[in-house]
Length: 289
Image (cartoon, rainbow, N blue to C red; front, side):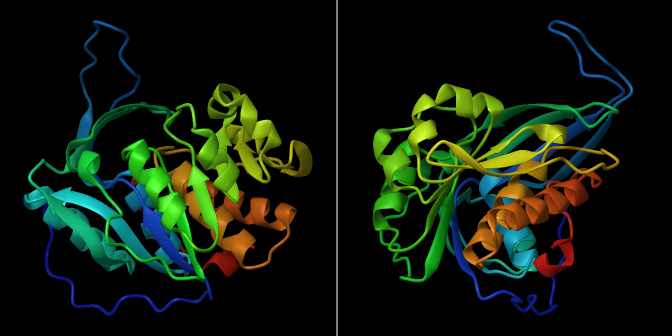
């Protein structure tokens, strides 16, 4: 990925929300073709791109572009990809002073996308496996948002250190420790991730996404809001879920109702699927309300 120095000032936050994202930082290597290959099959005629990615970095970039004061906690390799990913986050307005450097290569996601925007992804953890919150101090009013592309032990440690609102995007799918379920103020999952963790039905606040069908919020297992999906031209779905998570967390922590927060997050997700990049430009969150 080629980068050039960027001297533009970081976007000024337009929200009162301060957010620390604890998660993965990847270089996305994406092959786009008419259809996805089946096992053992070769599909030719694709186009190759390299761009910024990683669930953590995607959520941090989205949060900053939506107007939240955002910092990133994670790790990159001491390599050109790591430098490029930090530059990309800084351009989005993210504070990267909490990102460590590892002897491991920067995390890499190999992505295949078809003409309908559906994808298959293989992630090589690299430096993400060394991500830690050792020495990190979270402010009392700072929201912490984490995902599962870093070690579970690091996610648990972040939850313990968090002094305020702790949000967890439980993706990729994994069984969650009971401690995380009990500590999280908000857990965001898709259908399969929700099914994998039946204890989530007792959690205080859970958002479940159903793709184009919409999303709901459950309060101790009872539906408090449901919003249908929005129609959008799909180019790629890779970063849509991450942008949804950032938008939902910001909206809820800004005092928005469950239904209004879901509507805003859906609108942000719909805007992202229309872009080929996992970290596209976004407007202030108020523009999606």
